[in-house]
Image (cartoon, rainbow, N blue to C red):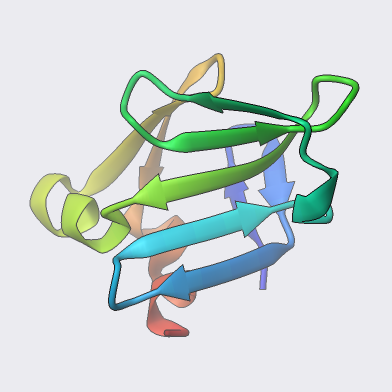
Length: 92
């Protein structure tokens, strides 16, 4: 399963239904050396070259149920709709 957000496709997808946390990675999470938070409160992981390799979306299902989308600044601002995340959220 893959999830695309903005121009990044994540091929490692895991959803924790109990905590309502969606983990997205496009590389080994252990390779992350820089960590940051988006203005919206989600967690971003970067490799040594500064490339985005992981995103942790907090309250993913709740945000989709309430707002119909998740807003995320990667640095570009993107909106992720339910159709992009439904398969990942259903896999829990």
